[in-house]
Image: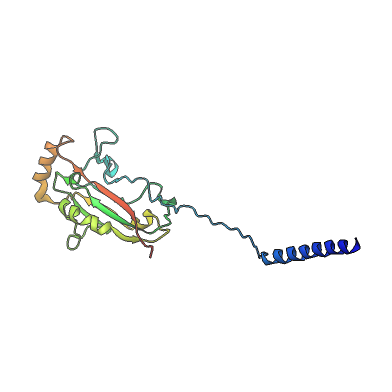
Length: 211
């Protein structure tokens, strides 16, 4: 009986040893690591709108004044004006991507039925020897190229890109040889057929700068 018990004990011990040996064969290292990353979409918000404010309804303390509505703007001999380009909300809008600006002149909406206004860009006063916007046709041909920007750096808003540009105009008063022409324009004007209009479109487009 004792021998039988010893045999059973030896068999159980062998099973335990074998099981431990097999268990050790299938053991392995195990490590669990977790991580995450998050990104927001880069801000665009180049601008919302801009309004060209070249003309007025009153000049020189009432020496020239429209008789129409408050928003009924007029031009006449001796009047002058300017517009510094600005975009609504532009001071707060700083895109996080580089972009370009394409400025185009609306050929249909840009006209001078009087053919008497002269235009120039940036300079404080008109210089007939060098300024290229001596007429509406010259403005239509050149303004878009002069205002367009090939690359606006990241973080620079649209106002920054255009803030150094001001469009000026003038209907010269002292050209005596044009008195007859000017008088005829004034007599014929009815607020619709004889007018001056400037149309400009600004398009901002993100640049593909990813290598």
